[in-house]
Each structure stands twice: as C-alpha cells, then as structure tokens.
Image 1 (cartoon, each protein chain N blue to C red):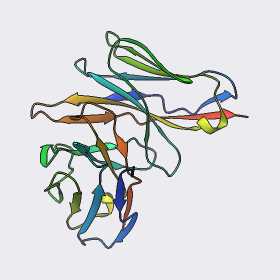
Image 2 (cartoon, rainbow over the protein chains, first blue to last red):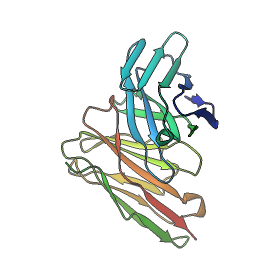
Image 3 (cartoon, chains in turn brown, purple):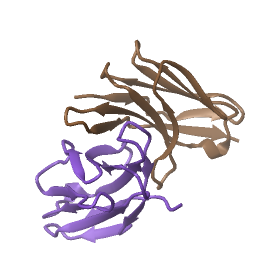
Length: 114
Length: 114
C-alpha cells in the first residue's frame, strides 16, 4: 500500500514567521508531487507542484523535493493569518493501465497567530 | 472561466437508497478524478478517467460504487444501496494534462446516509 505521511499538527507559528511543512512518501518511483491548501469546509486548492529534485519558488511559497530521501516540503515565508488552513501533500503515481492514481496525506493543520 | 462544478452540494439519503452525484469539469480538461473525504482525513482516491476511458477504479470501495464519463466531459458517480459508512464528502477534480499535473477541485457533495 503506497503511503504519504504528514505530521497532523497543529503547527502554530507567529505572523511573519516561516512555516515549514513536511511530507514523506513510500513509492520510490513517484514522479509528481503537489501541495494543496484546504480551508475548513472548503475543497482543496492547488498551490504548488514540483517534479524534479531541488527547490521551486512561487511568491511566498517554496516547495522542496528530495527523491533520494523520498521527502517533500513546503515553506511559507512571511506567514499570514489567512494562511491558516490544512495543507495536503499529494503524490501522483502512474499505473499500468496508463492512468494515474493520486495519494494524499492526511494533512497538516497550520495556525498563524496574529 | 468556470471552475469545476458539482451537484447536488448536499444530499441526504436513507440507507438502501441509490444516489447519483454529478461533476462538470473545467472545459477541455482531459483528466477527471473522484475522491472520498472523511472528516479530518485527506481525500481518498476512488477512480480516474482520461477522456471517456476509466483507466483506474482501484479505489472504489465496493461494487456498489460505479462511475462513468460517457462523452469525456460530465461524470457521474453512482452509489447503489447506500450504507451509513458511505457518508462523506465526495470531491471531483479535473486536470488539463493526462493525469500527471495538478488538479482543480469542485466544491464537493456532502452525502449523509441516515
């Protein structure tokens, strides 16, 4: 059973700080990695995708991928109270039929204190 | 343009009833995914379509669950003889690419089986 593991939190950071969210995955052959943000009572929203080792930056968000360690992280700089949400790590795996199966972690709850 | 839409947004069914949940993906999106999300958990993969072809249905929990996308656009998830354990939010997502890219989620259908 392929797995994606995240610390459920809650992770609490003060406004303006850097929030660091981590994720590990079990399938060494995974190729596509994503971070989604989910506000309470809402559906997930794609915020970052990463496909190769290293860092990818988009505004205040940086995704980091280390395939050797099977580790993905998300850094949120200058955290704002509006960043308070659950952050879901997701991994896409290609299956034999040519389709894709997406495995989500359970999510990390982030609270940014004003 | 319009995002992913789902209907109904809320559905209450008596145990044993059949239900049909509809998803309208973003126009032109090739891939369509269905997920089940329980409270406090990440979305659980149910099935994946590429155009009208159902390439993976390994996540469907039982043969009471059936999904179709006959013309490669709108999709329907049908649950026969609903059980209380089917109560969850059912999310639909679409992706422009063949499944390896990030996904855009609809608002979900909250199903309650009484």
